Amino acid sequence: MDDFLKGVANTGFPIVVAGYLLIRIEGKLDNLSASINKLSTVISVKLGSKDEDKGA
Image (cartoon, rainbow, N blue to C red; front, side):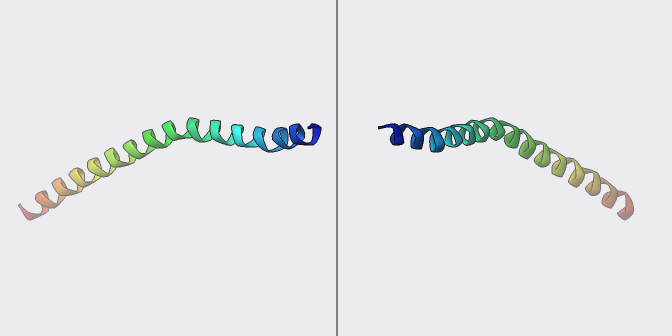
């Protein structure tokens, strides 16, 4: 029984920490993804307006 508890402690703790970090990072990755998409849209609008200026 003692070996079983040591095994759970040795493997369970890293699993819990990894799960906690993944959950915490998920929100930050969602925010980063949204920011990248917004930046892409802004860049394409800015480049599109410069292309229109050159053609006119």
